[in-house]
Length: 477
Image (cartoon, rainbow, N blue to C red; front, side, top):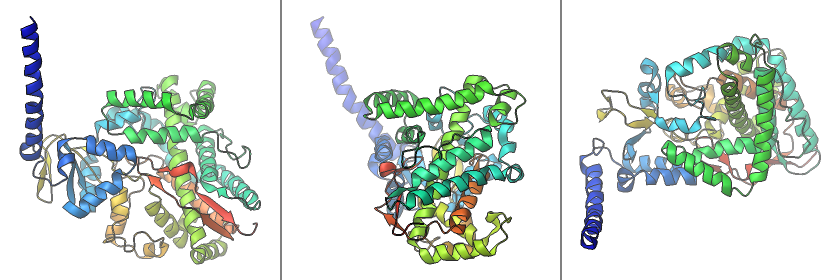
């Protein structure tokens, strides 16, 4: 028996390296994607991609691969990335676009696929149909006063904090505006983040940061994702603050749903009327609260940062705003619109790929065949910072949008594109436009200087290191 056991161990010990060697050779030379260039390690194992994603360097690392290997790069054994915007339409829009990749399951909330994360179009359709009318431009215009009120209160607080002479974390202010606007408009009740103690961190911030951190494990198989998320939560040194923030936001959402009537015209009321359970409706509310707070907060803070660095452009914006009819929709003002488009290009609130799965039969791109089930995508990082499309891509130049090329319009994808692009994009744009207009109208950035640098971790939702985008006013406003 001892001899037989020893033989079994020896067999498996010898078989393991042979098996590993066979997998390596297959993935490098015989795999259906072996004709696509990429770093050998990435072609052999997904660990290369997992590591870059965890470290927050995914988008820039893949961009460097494109510079070395060309517009089509293999970044994992079964994943391919494109850098040419010509691939956008076939992947995301034509015939409804490809389905979302399996990794989106990692963004489910409490076991419920959200409108954002759902893979099944039929499952998503019933939920999206219930609320999509709230995001129509006409619906937003009818209740724009709700957003304007939040904007005014945010700029009031910005000017009050600026007058102290201390550094002001504008990201905290813009997140406060965003969570108040999305909750007041969609739920009929404001979270009242702006009303929280001046200078303190928004109580919902750790809730937002926790959801952002999901992106570091985005591409993992779901079982591994759940394991690592659970382990990471237990080791989090800021667990008390996270728990407090999660409890505050959960309590807010649960109360909204509990008090909602099935005929209420609110987001939660519409979900319940569509037959969605209360438990799932809470999850859907949490999802839209996160998305509406994180991206809009990041984008508006980025606008403040760049306008503070560019006083001439800030003054040109102010003059346009002051000369326009106050009742004019700010999204129709040419230079303000250019400022917004340039802000969205540079903010990279969502810098990484929007992964999709190639359907049955495979597809051919620029003469290159991609087999079915391959995960493909393009990233805003690579498209928005492409010097061939956006000369001097690191510079804030709203003027470039006064006469955009077809390629600029095509490759500008801050909200994704196709039927699965951000459902709340019109609401987000309204908040940004009215926010920037009020800041310009009241000259709230006069005397403001940027402090430090804005460093991003390139997760699906970018993380600002230190959770701060700071301005300091040399003179009170």
